[in-house]
Amino acid sequence: QPQLLGDVLPDAAAAMCTSMCTCYALLVRQLARPPVTLVHGDFRLENLRFSSTTGCEGLSVAAFDWQFCCKARGAYDLAYFLGLALDPRTRREREQAYRQAYEQVLREVAVKQAEE
Image 1 (cartoon, helix red, strand yellow):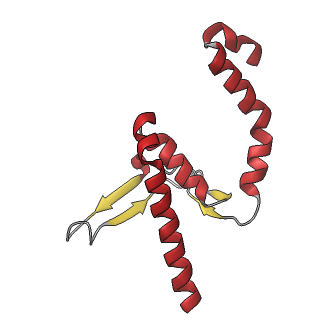
Image 2 (image 1 turned 45 degrees about the horizontal axis):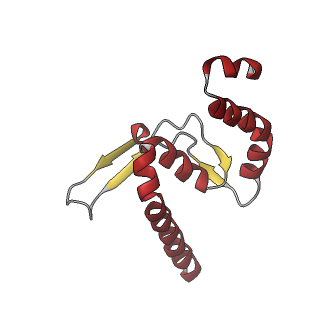
């Protein structure tokens, strides 16, 4: 119950929780706005399996545990992954580079699809 948060959380954390509760419906609506795609919904290291036969160039990645899959904006899985896979300090240091790599792959896929 929001009125009890101040009893167990610092004021700043309680205010953030209250703000998130207030904005949650808006966030859900924004995530559902087109363009949407199939997202995993629980995209974290624990739900990925890696295999390699020839080093990084032959690296394969498979996602499993699709119980939370849904239609949403594709960046949802990226944000979820970054939020859970890294500690906050490391995420802040690397987030821009990861986002740029993600955007580059999206551009490459779009070019390949346009050429087909």
